[in-house]
Length: 184
Image (spheres, rainbow, N blue to C red):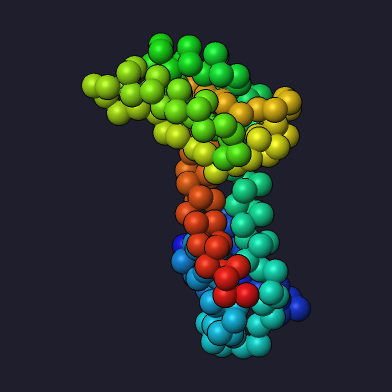
């Protein structure tokens, strides 16, 4: 669920950290649901007052969710929890030291298949690492300060857990983006 509040001008603002003051309205954390709330004027009913929800609210929330996850990935990198590159990722998987594996959504299918095979072999008797494949190569490269980052792995740590949760929220949100685009 995503909490929304009204700013002093009556504009609907997403409160992803759930810290902003005032009455909140909750909407399911999916782009289609936020889009439906905007188009049906559900925010005005929820706040019981005039509420201005711009047509860009769906994209704004998606951008904020992505930014939060990528910021956590960058912090994990600064904390020394991230390894990038196909061979380094494979080595962490073979050592069973990968808590999460990140693959660019626009990366080559054969690289993804090879890493999946490595994970299946290394973690056949236990639960394997979480896999995040919702960000593009460009987004990963910017977050990690590298060029053409397609594969990354994170070792165990609090920042890794927070990144996986934030990336999961973003993935869940954008999974409905195609239906929002089709609806106009």
